[in-house]
Length: 243
Length: 108
Image 1 (cartoon, rainbow over the protein chains, first blue to last red):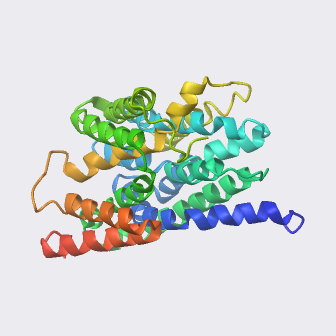
Image 2 (tube, rainbow over the protein chains, first blue to last red):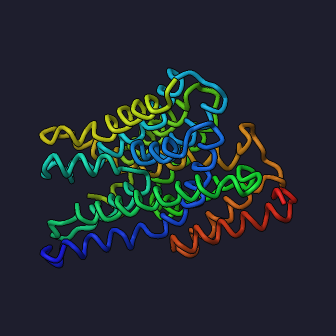
Image 3 (tube, rainbow over the protein chains, first blue to last red):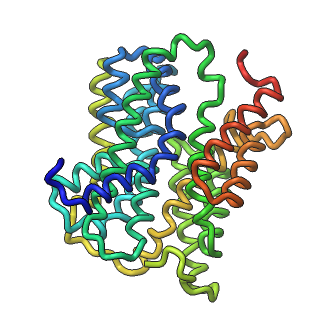
């Protein structure tokens, strides 16, 4: 690594530094996943293997819950599909920034794409400066997220069984607090507020839809209302985050 | 059934979705779509958070005994005032655990 120019390393470390608070928020969730995966009957290797290969917290969590309930493979895989469809939106939002990279880079960054890495990388790309190494920032953030998830999955596998009623501690709140911490500072103009209000309400109303489809419907409704408001609400891009 | 096959299936699905648009570097989006994608994080994350706070047990819980909702509101307030991510996450978690303790909801 010593042959890397300082600006690349700087971007890499900036990525690690800026995602750090979000890592803390995912620790309880990773521990809980590791513990529940063992409860669901996975071997330690399979529990860790899912973290290593799938690397999608919400989907892994739902998968082990479904396994515990004895759901079929078809239900489990279609639920994985729908829960992770939001990543298609992330992939679309970041594509203009990574399309100049070689396919090896694009595959790696795609494999490591998470809610948290996306949020941090999108903010980096939105900053207007001439750095040609913003993908190093993206990689630093995404890699830190990956290593953190692996380490605390392992902790959950090894020690989760020793804490009685781990599932009743409400560790899932850590993820909600993390997402609140990402979203609230983004609510700086009326279209963003509309996106949040509509997405939140629709999501609540659509909870009954199968395979967590409500999440997708809600996200699209929120995005649509923000775009409509931007066009007709008289408020043109008020600077914040506008490309 | 071997769980490894499920894991491989989840890998294939998840990676295909994440790589879906990165795989086509020559694809260009129309400007309106670019603007729309700007609102993705707010919309998606709020759609996850709101039911998480209001329906922690899969049904609507608007009472004073819902620690998720109360701590969630406190977390939003901390985020709005502090604008500091670490303070928000830690403050939110501490508030949540204190509330669960006060409400007698911790499995002690």
